[in-house]
Length: 489
Figure (cartoon, rainbow, N blue to C red):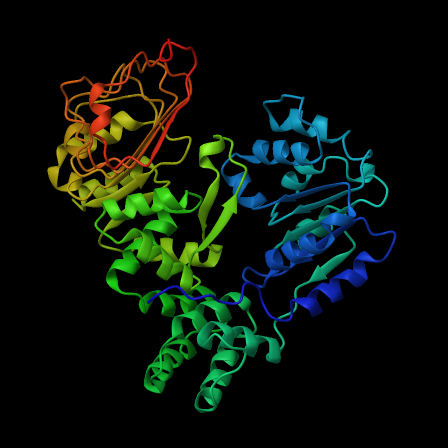
C-alpha cells in the first residue's frame, strides 16, 4: 500500500482549545494541569496550545516525555533543554540536584511559556520547576499527566480533565482514517456507528482502528474485525488495539515487535538499516506502520549525543508499546529488552533462540551471559540485535556475533575490534566510551561490507583508520568523536 495522509490531529481540537483557554484567561492562574487516560489526546492538545500561544511570550519551552526521561535517568537532559530554552547557556552542571538549584532562580526574569508533557511523579515536577512560586509575571506553565493525584498533591487547583470525544468528532476522526474524508459512504454508516461505540471516544483507538480499515471495501471484513473488538471489554484498550496488530502481515508484525522492544527513540535511518539487515523491507514496512497509526515519526532537534543524531525518530504510544512487548514475551522469536540475568538464564535453559538483547543501563554482568551463550550454539543462531553495557569480554562472544545486524557497545574495552568478532552481516555499529580503542581493524582484515552506519564516540584514542574503510560502499553515516587529535595530525 502506498503512503497516504491522515488528519494530523483529532477533529474537535478547536472546541478543546476553547474549553481550555477559558481557564487560561483567569489572571491568577499560572500553572494548569491537563489530565486524562493514555490515548485521550493530552499531548495533542498541549502541542496545539503551544503552537497557538508561544508567540505571545518572551521565552518558550516544550519538554516532552518527562516520565520516559525519568525512567531512563535522563531528567538532567530535560533540565538542560529547559535552561537552554530560557536562554541560560553558560552554567555547566552534572546532577539533577545542581540543575534544580540553577532552575530555582531562573523563572522570575522572563515572561515564559513552559509545557511539561507526561509527568507521573512529583519528583519530576520538582526537578523541572523547583520554585513554582517564583514564576515571572504573566508566565504560564501547562503540565500533562495521567495521574490526577500527582497534580493535586503538587498543589495544582486548576486542572482540565480531557473529555471523551463527542460523537460527531469521533465519527469524523474515525472516517478520516478509514476513508480519508470526514464522513462514511452510506453503505458503511451502520458499521461505523458500531465501531464508534466500541472505541468509546478514545482518539488512539479511533485512529488505529480506522487506519486498519483503510482501503478495505469488504463489509464482511469490517464485520469480522468488529466482532473481534466487541468480544473485548472497553477497559481493555491494549486487547482492542491488538486487532490491528493481528491484521498485519508476518513481516510487518516482526517489524512492529522490533520497534516496540528495541527501536523506540531511534533515528529513522537506523531503524531502516536494522530492519533491512534482518531481511525485512525497512522503508516500506515502516511506512506501513506509520500509515496504520501504529508508529509515529517525530522530528527532534535535541539529542545529548550531538548534531548527527538530530532528525526523525520513532515514537510509539505507550499502549501500543506495552501491547507489543506483551506479545513479544510470548513470541517464539525472543526479544529480551531490559532483561535481568535470571531472564537470560531461563532462555538458555530452555534452549530458545534469541533475536535481540537490550540490557538495562545498569546491567554490566556481560561476562556472565556471554559464558552462558557460549554453551549453546543454537542460541546464537538468531541473535541479530545486541546492546552491551560493560567491559568484561570472553571469546564465547565469537559464536554469538555470527548473525549480528546491530551492535551497540558502551564501554568497549579493547585496542581494536578483535578478529574473532564476526561482523559480516552488521548494518549498524555503535561503540561508545571506548577509552582504549586505537584502530578499528587491521588493514588485511575484511571490513564489514554491509555496514550502513558507524558511530564511535567519547574518549577515543584512534590513531588511524584502516585503508579498507574505503570498501564500505553501503556506508551512509559515519561519526567519530574523540579526545585528542592524533587522527588529524
